[in-house]
View (cartoon, each protein chain N blue to C red):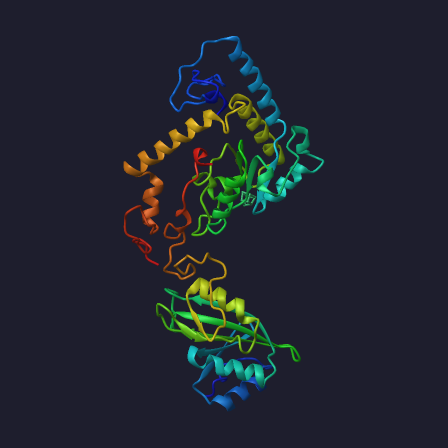
Length: 237
Length: 180
Ligand code: SF4
């Protein structure tokens, strides 16, 4: 690294966020509010401004929601007004994954792979009831919400959502992008913290008392973690 | 009483076909029934192939319109065995359409002869029935799952399989933002 090659300088602070620095893994004190830091703020602001108005969506349209997504791209609603019209069908060119439709268990590994192939920084919108919760398709093959397996930044309710809702979610995401993120950060730092807290919550639930849904899973013969698989629970078939 | 005695059609366009089958196989191999103007031939799984071969090779039923499976577990007032394979065959010259229903007893891995040698188009339909019900088609050239992933172990359309599955749909690793 250039900083280390020139001598043993103290790590140079490149962002104004606590704990994010170059050349050190430890948490650093937030730097004093100097001119440099404010200049970084300006740079971050500009970078975020550029990012939020040049989203390149990857349309992962697996069902009827995809049709509504096409309407958003067409002239009446015109997603180009918000700078997100450059739909690309290779994840390597995109930074916004729009999951539009049901995802079944055979498709989920593909979705995860697509997410991993997208370069940072990247965001994800879960569009419609199906992508967000499984919708009415509460069956053995349909994943009950893609947010169980990939990070999601914005959810759109509806079946299918109106195009205006999709535009609204793009605007919300733009606000989110403007608030977080920095020139050198690869993702949104505020979201890393949020993800961690979610993760902790998930484990706390699994280890502690069971939620209503988990009780339901048992009733329908799920394989609970570490438990026995049951056929049909106590239901009479 | 012949196998065709309980049929009530006045103009019976299946008469010649059924007479031929009866002459060829004798009574007791199959029975007939009528439902919504459709004539069904009920036969046990081990004799189904012979009947279908006769229909295809001698009686001109050159097209297999549909091949599907049914699980009748717990069906009210059911006297026949648990599984049925339904073949719908069509004679393209006379437009005569017959339904053949082969019954299979309850077994973890029921078996029936494949009809791919008769109608190559049965290939994927039999794979689907295998995928959903676990019924093995003996003599099928490529009996693999067609809809569910290869690593899936259950047969989801069996009636004793819970609608929401046994947790297979959520048996994946979670990718957090810090991993990607
Ligand atoms: S939410 Fe409604 S419109 Fe969207 S994929 Fe599901 S069923 Fe289709």
